[in-house]
Length: 214
Image (cartoon, rainbow, N blue to C red; front, side):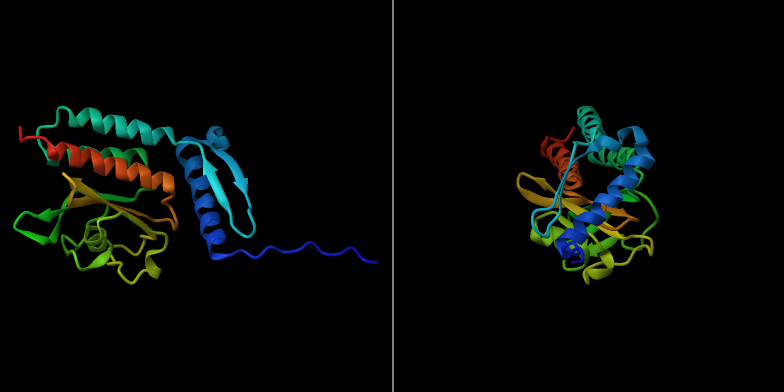
């Protein structure tokens, strides 16, 4: 009797998404930190047809957060903190290809206004909260991660190179006042670890804005 062929496990949508994120992270880590950090992959499990990936904490995230927290202690105004944040994030994480802040218009809380950013210029300097992924993050009051912007009808096209996006709200005393918006030229860039990092950056600005004006 011939040898029975091995059973093929179908790659479900969750599997394909996590696999794509894994391969993206592999390419990014090698490009940014070099092959000596290849052991960042700790575990790869295949429960049933799903794939779960577990990564060691990225030390660069913690270093950036520490730098932002330190700068916030002496920043003269929120705009200076925003500029420092986008410049630091973009410099340390080159696969974050566009990093910027949108803040609610003080005279119209239904309109987002572009603040400091690093990356390609954008025509979307004002975005109604009823439009786009940026608007949706404010309207829903929660972080939105899009693995493939071409598959999300809410996406407002800015660059043909943009493949994935994350938007995290900035809160002051519990109220959403703006957001940090990050685009990548790679699909499925933003893992749960990236999300936690971006939300920490948004929190730093929100905490700063809660303080009495200097």
